[in-house]
Image (cartoon, rainbow, N blue to C red; front, side, top):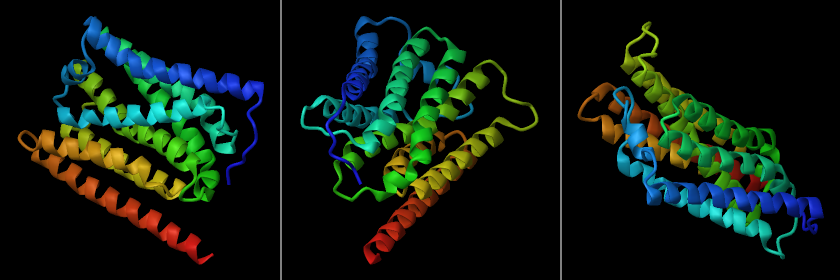
Length: 264
């Protein structure tokens, strides 16, 4: 359960840094587009998407993610927000992730390919660590707890989308540079990536018992299905199956947990 302790000066320093990094992450794409420096994130993604592609409109999910990040960050600095274990656990990791996704926009603009891979996987990793390491705290949150809706959900949505975006980023760069291992065809690598993403989605959802992590993954897989229908039926069919299986499995896991809690 969340505590209602007043934040210490060190806690407030952390919260202000979280707020500042969230502003950085949200504003960087707007500044990049407004000033027109470098290529856009969409142009970077489309540059070498011959192996694995996500339909363009799927990236509109960033609007929802940014709204969640804004709500999470604003809550940090409200005077009435008490300190809690969940806020403390996600504080520094979220700040690192926000810096990472903001820098990713810059790296993509200037086509710093290796940097985009490092940044996106690092941002994903620093969010997955608290999600998995402190899953017990997350599972213990009441359904109406603000930490669930204003901390766990925004962080889970971001982590879920990065779980899709990271392998797409990696395969895109590898395709463009001709670095995909020749031991298998590009379609096989893309199918393996899609299946792995689905397995990770279910595994993390089972651990934290929160569907927020799986939802952006399902959305991304639908984006792969739509994008690949006309050029790679095998990959599109696989993405559709994995999307449905991931959604069903995640819903079952979460509902089963809720029923168990209600019986206790």
